[in-house]
Length: 292
Image (cartoon, rainbow, N blue to C red; front, side):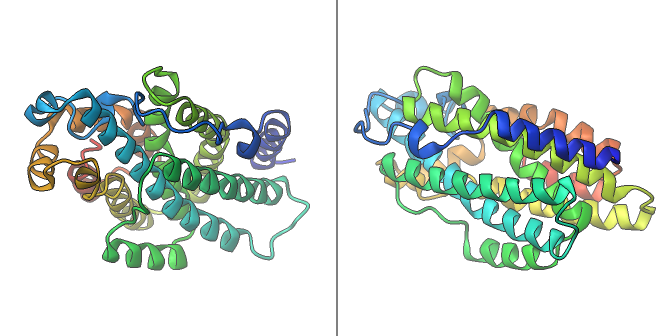
C-alpha cells in the first residue's frame, strides 16, 4: 500500500470510529432562543466599529445570527462545487483503492453537512443567502474545469477558513447551543477532509513545473477571493434591522475583522507557500480578500 493509500485508509478508519448523524445529534426541536448569538461576536463584520458600539445587545445578536446563516449558505454553495469536483476526479478509477472509497465517504459527509447547514440557517430565521450572480457563474465554470492541485487547494482554502471560525464558535457559550453542535460536527468531520485535501494537493504537485504552479496558484487565489468575500452577504444588515449602507461602509473598513481573517489563514498560507502556490500574483488576491 502506498503512502497515499495509507493516508486514505486511516481517514476511512477514523470516519468509521467518529462520525455524526446531524438528524439525531442536533436539537432541531427546541425553539430558537434569541438571547443567544449565531456566532462569536468577535467574528461579526461590524465588531469593533462605531456602529457596533451603538447597537443594542438584541441588534448585535440578531446580526450574528444572520451572519452565521450567511456563512452556512456560502458553505453549502461551495460544498456542492466540492462534491462535483471530487466525483469527477474519481470517475472510473479503481473502486478498491482506499482513496476512491474515502472520496465517496467525503462526499457523503458533505451531503449531510449541507442539509445540516440549511436546517441551521432556517432555524436562525434567515432567508436563502446566495453569492452574487457572477460568482455563481464563476463557480459553475470552476467546478467544470478545475482539476488536480487547483481543485484540492481551493477546497482546502474554503475548509480551513471556515474551520478556524467554527472552532471559536463551538466553544462560545454565547452562541446558540444547536449552532455550537453544528459547528462541532463540522470541525470534527472536516478535519479529515482537510487532511485529504492537503495530501491530494501535495500528490498532484509532485513533479509539477514552475509554469504549472504559477497558473494554478493564481487560479486558487481567485477562487479563494470569491469564496471568502461571499461569506458575509450584503443583505444580512437589512435583515438584522440595520442601516445597510452604513453597515456596509463600516464593515468594509473594519480592521478588526480583517485581522481576524488574516490570523485564521496563517497556517494555510504557510502550507500554500511550501507547495509553491503562494506566488506574487496569487498574493494580490489573498490581500484583496484580507487573508494575508
